[in-house]
Length: 338
Image (cartoon, rainbow, N blue to C red; front, side, top):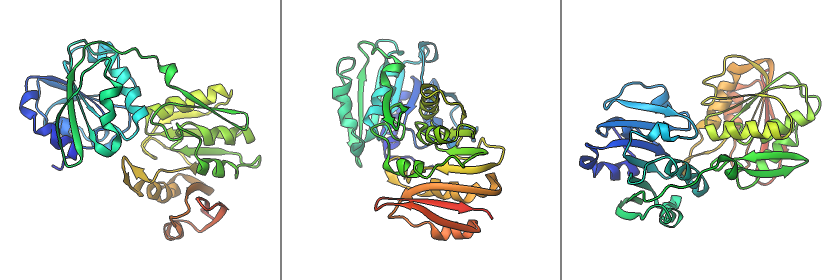
């Protein structure tokens, strides 16, 4: 079993966890919770993770809690928190404020993360509630620990950021794509939407809901379905729809995993990063599998960085494709089944 650098640091102290009741949360990229022995273990997920969602084989019997937020009721029987720091500092602050508002004073906290993720800032961010000490650092990762001395205050509404674009209000939580600002690629794709777009539309990786909101503003009669694998994105999209008095179906799905029908149009601004690493699996998966979820004369329309070329993979899967909008930074592809 291969473990991340962060998990390898945790494993060096595995003996101290045998008598702990552990609550795992944050950006967990491997299966360590299944293998780290403890009195009992729960894993908090807010992103659909195939390692756990589709795999029930546990070495160490663990429970899965799938939700954006935790509550005092969920964490009350656990005396240890192991938190994996994500690449976004604002997302870490959001998640930790929620977690530390629920745990009892005296809870032992472990925070682990890659140096490049900004994990060192955890000392300053949490200094009012925990005095964090560095336990160890190795291979570009750091492990901190401390005891919770007072609880944070957490209000979900305080973490929403609102962007305005062409009279649309876009609501976004930390960690969701487009949190700092509306992405230029998304704007370029949105500029291709017109009143002539109708029928059933699927927004893959809806994020803040920006693309669907733009499309519905142009074509209010379109039947839009929005999917994302992050619970924070699902909530952000729903808030964006409410803020603009728009209607669409929104639900959680790891790419097409929870989709069981076909559409006239699929739209997407897919990521090309997995955590801190460049990864093209998502955009390739969206293109290759779109064929299964498009109607006979269906269309896939997506935006990518102009420095990457997808002609080969499009040619292999679609009868026809072309570029319908382009800048130095971004390219909008249109791929047609027939």
